[in-house]
Amino acid sequence: MRWLLWFLLVPQLYLFQCWIGATGLPLFDATVLLCVFLAWFARIGCLPLLLLGAALGRALVDDAGLAVQVLVIGTPTALMVPLRTLVFRRHWVWQGAMAALVAIAVPRLSGLLGAWFAQPSQSAELHGASVLWAALLVPPFLFVLRRMPPLRGFEEDTA
Amino acid sequence: MEQRWGNRVFPVGLYGALVAALCALALPTVTEPAEKVLLGAVGLPLRFWSRLQPVVVEAGALRTEQVAVLQEQLQQRLQSTLVQGAVHLVDPGLRPEVVPVVARRRPGGSGLPSELVLGRRFEELAGCAAFVTSADAMVGFLARPGQAGPADEDASQPARVLMLHHPESLRVAASMQAPTGARPLHLVVEAAASLDPWPLRTSLWDDPYGASRFRDSGAEVRSMRVPEPWGQGMPTDLLVGRARIWGYESGETIGVYVEPAIEPRAISHVVVWRQEPAAVPEGGEAVEPMAAPAPVAVQLLSLPGLDGRRLHASWSRKDRVADGAAVSQGGVCIGTVRTLALGQGLVSAFHATRHSWSLLLLPEEAGQPVLELQGTVEGTVPGGLRIGLGGATTRAARGWLFTGSNGPNCPAGLVLGRVVEAANGHIVIEPEVVDVRAGAVAVAAGGNR
Image 1 (cartoon, each protein chain N blue to C red):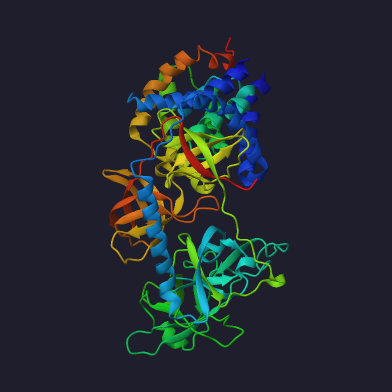
Image 2 (spheres, rainbow over the protein chains, first blue to last red):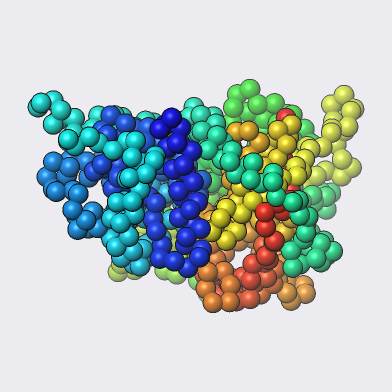
């Protein structure tokens, strides 16, 4: 059931993000949020399929193909996973700082991979405001969404 | 405990997923069907939502009749642009025929695509002269079935043109106007290597010393007739390209390259020269012309918040829409579709794409030739949409912009917008807006079932 919810709802999160952007509210970046969740909160064993769900959602709203989306989301996630053991990840300051870094890395990676694999897309454009909003909005959004399905079902047991 | 720590730091499954993604990019044909099914399943809620919308059939701000008039003008002007430049150079016994280009492939000199796939079969072009032109420029030579291609290729398949910078193209004899006062230099032009700075290189100069004294780029290189069978009937004075000098910073020339007269990525039509009267095909049977992709009605749904940049398209599951097919309404191009499973696709609107397009520009000024351009959308600017122009042809003019040759299912001549600013290296267009509200019906080019 939790997998069904993940594959049903996470792609729609991207559409929700676009809808929020269109209303003029601060840009909420679903890719950054999911990267931070996958890297620091999700169960390690579930990561490949969780990544696939997130990549499918991003492929709905972006020109590049599914494989490029897996790399765009998966690369920063893979780099951040080892930090689970090094930082006190539940502190919102760390989450905000990491979200800002991911918000810079994702467009750069999109641009780089798009150029390499001839799949250029608009998401390669970096906007300064989106980095700021990622740092400010991802921790509270994550706080709320981690307590709701489908993210709640995949949170690592820290007890 | 140690193993658990190791798994937490080095998630093997995640790395496996990244490696699998790299494999998918290396072998796209293997993984593409699975990707279509997965994305199709994820897009199903959008398909249901789309079906709930009332169907709207409405053209954009530009009326369909106006589009038809513009397209007619484009065809007429394109015909005269492409034919008139060479008609006085070619043997009077040959009749010109404008043929659309449906695809470009195989990197040749300087890494540029060097093979054109035409919208005609080999058998339809039987009896045509080997050389192919565009305006007064030499494009290349018609390939024979199987030449520089698959061994099992036969005459019923789409004809191909090997451009001059194709590694297996014929070399051409040419002449170049030397600096003032000197006599023209004679040379041979051939394909350069993929790493060379320009697609064509020169060799066998009749005056190597004279060639080494060349300092300035830009001299015209034109074809010369040579005795048959080496000449392939190629006339004298077709423009091969412009000389590009490669040398030391101090000014000494090392080599002379040639930049083709037409940007290979911009070519949308070529001219083949048919013997008159038309050659009778073997067996005396008329050759059936190659069928254009049949149009398919698709229902569009603009994805929420994406302001028409990305759309969900759905169609009857009995129909087939090809990947990369143009989606248009009333002759106005909306974008191209990436097909998914279950009769769905995702459309990227023209203004949201970032890949290279082949474009046709119909200048406002009567009598001006149609320009074949290669451009990439750079983003919105005050007053319109900025398109950066690449390749050799960076000059432009105010007028109307149309699609050029962008694949077998994206026909040339769909309206994109009016060019309101033309500068060297870029243009700004007022895109033709199509109402893509939920339920809007458009047409996509279908593939053969």
